[in-house]
Length: 151
Image (cartoon, rainbow, N blue to C red):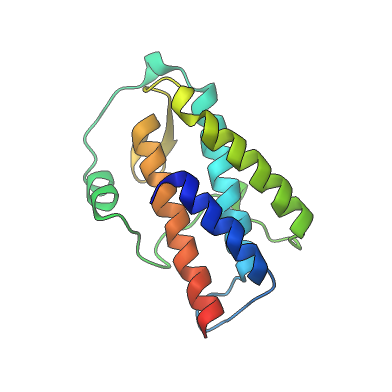
């Protein structure tokens, strides 16, 4: 599934915006959608601001493992505060973020291939690896949303 398709899947989950299930997650569907969009927006904005000349590849075993595996374990990582929302999540804010995320994802391929951002565990990710990371990260939250809605 392409990143654009995961974004479409995320948009479809807005129908379950108010769903919660503490057996699956301490956060509701609204939070998982909001968080996923915040991550996409923040990371692509960072890519756009990065200097390709500063990118230097270094081996990172965790990056190789998880980006090859294509999934992340649940409950193991802690997201940075910048992509966490402890306030009331409003659907209008999420819809605005969705519009921004769609625009940024559509611009991704026009960025230099050595545009990058620094992930706390995976190190520097170039444009291609960032696209892969965003797809895996969004799918991770889509699976949690599906589990919240299923039960």
